[in-house]
Length: 195
Image 1: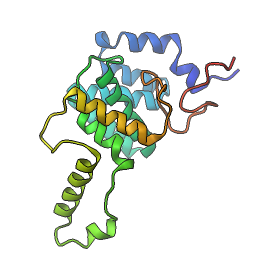
Image 2: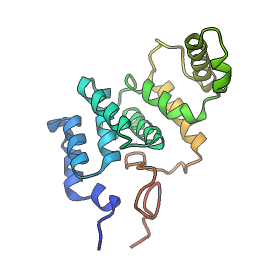
Image 3: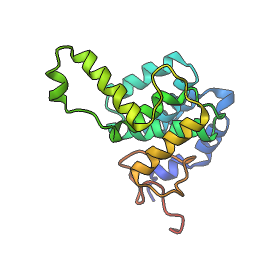
Image 4: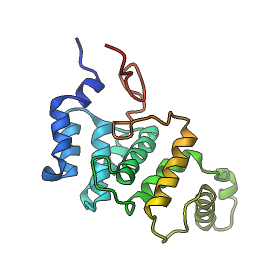
């Protein structure tokens, strides 16, 4: 029998690795998951490390994106995953402070942004892009840039993103949401009634 991503992602080794992340560090967990060829899960733990202030984690994340180890859909799923963990206290302490950029990335597929040709026609493309981004975030319910997210606002934004996805309300956000194209039969989570 061949090993699937689900088998490896839920193996005793990975379970113990994640359970002990506070002793080893989130980036070390991410590195080990990459060694196990669990790219999405490794990316998620590097996002956790970055959210906790690990400056080197950002370089690893950028490298993974540049090398296309993770696809655009995975960026959305990973950002949503880590934001949910910080908002709901899965694997990490509840802390809405690092969730704004994660929630913005997770909301991106649902933002009402103008077409690229409209932005390109603006006299100042950068200013037009920044204004369009700020307006889209405001319409979605984000507070203005510079205003920290409190837990209630972060939870509301997470709820809106989850509603936009159409996923079931019973989705277990503590479990891995990705990768977006897994080698397992039931995406987002394997069905529990399958042997």
